[in-house]
Image (tube, rainbow, N blue to C red; front, side, top):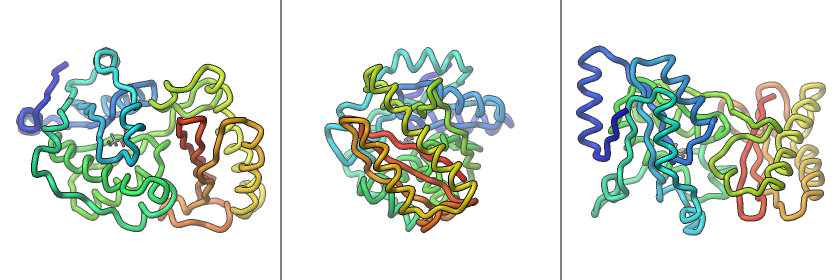
Amino acid sequence: MRIFRSISEMQDWSSVEHLAGNSIGFVPTMGALHHGHAELFSQSVKENTRTVVSIFVNSLQFNNASDLEAYPRQLEQDQVIAEQKDVDVIFVPTNDEMYPNGFASSISVGPVAQHMEGLHRPGHFDGVATVVVKLLNAVMPDAAYFGRKDFQQLAVIRSVVRDLNIKCNVRGVPTVRNGMGLALSSRNSRLSTNRLEQASIIYALLNDMANQARSSETSTLTLQNQFNDRMKSVSGTKVEYVEVVDSDSLLPATTAQKGTTICVAVWFDDVRLIDNISI
Ligand code: PAF
């Protein structure tokens, strides 16, 4: 497995691979790799001749300095996981490499980024879009893989890639869950064992709401009230949002029914967890 730290090294390698007729799959990450990432790597390895993983904690997408500070970092462990999954290259640019002095451009994402995560984390998706486009320009992949847990992020990236004519197939990969149903996330490593168990309530409630909506169209307001009430039983939690959106446009929907997705964000103490379920 090769490790590149500069954009030019990365681009040179990709150009040679393309000239040799090899396809490149790419998984952008912020590190602290877990089985969810491993699933993305496997998908890329299955569908491409080469797989590149980037590890870069992108300061532009954090709207809170303490969240950026607390974000888990474990490069050595990450390298082992990537190697075990047959990743060919890890791209680990420094902050200065990505955002040198004088860096001043940014991508402004449209309406798809304006509610849910976009509303509660102002500037977050502009930061995600900017770094993803920079990474795509560095890696020049044929396909890039993103987890469906970050449902709105996937929609944002699809729209940016489409709008900016970036030649890359954006692939969404189903959420990987632990035995209790909790969606895997790098942030889970900040939860105690007890909190991890309690957090499995999120997916249990999402399933309850989805089953209800599958048997009969249910108003968003009813689901919001139900979710908020049930979460009150877990101390130290705070529901940030419960939204029902059209699964393609991500526009808010007033009822949950086929073709919509229920998305939630919940704080467990100072750890913010998101999840979603499609009807
Ligand atoms: O999902 C993530 O880990 C990040 O938002 C991404 C796509 C790597 C951009 O920094």
